[in-house]
Image (cartoon, rainbow, N blue to C red; front, side, top):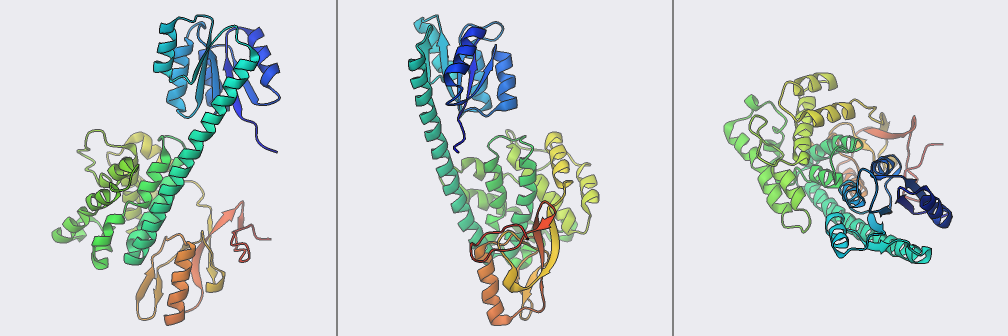
Length: 391
């Protein structure tokens, strides 16, 4: 059964709200509120809504101000204004200030209002479809670049995938808007490392006093190189900025530094401390002594403190599948590094591992972190190429 579209009606007249509920309640998932403040509370508690219909004249907050706040909270929600005051100036202000989709006068025929709501829902579906298409297209581009990085420099991709896991956990707390951009920036944070030799890149997680000035200068250039590469992809300007500024000076941050760059910097520094041998609590304690954004640091601490959601298993090559994570560097033949610890396996990665196995072979079982569903490790369904629950 298809899920009903969610509509919020806001009006200070209980009889009108009751009419809206009776008229549209069977077709849509309808919520009502008596004023702007109650409407915002309903929006936060029961949203997101596809369409919001608001009266203009209400006690406290006007309909124009209310719809402007809705726009700030969720720009994709389509907004309709109802009013008994049909002055041209009011209509212009409503459209300009709240980006109102339709402006209807009261009393409004329910058939007319119903048509306006249907039109608004079509507009909402169109906007969401376009955003989904754009987002998935960009994710596809990022995936291709990540695969190239995996072949050119496995250490760099391993690090990018480790910090992206941390970033995704922070994303669940919804403290940064348009978080998908931050996630993409994390995935692409090491793309500039394609220009750095592997032996130098392996020093990236060492303490600063353990890296020569020459190699430190080489490593310091990769964010700029990565940002410039990404800037050539349309619609990724924000991602490019985050990547370029990921290694900013904590004591002298640039103006207008994106929150995404702050989070990536924090994740990178945490990863370096873990690679250096600090456990989770030691690493966090050291981070707290530095000048990170306090809100992002608190969210990060909460995120990495959660259950990892993985269990370590020794698995034969034939049973590895996408979504599993390498628990140790994968070495073939005479010390050939195929992939690094922390890399999340994709189908392309698995094919690469099998190609090396055919040529060089691997000794014993592979040490993997296997995702949990509930408390149960997952396993591959080879026929459907899915990762279902173990029976």
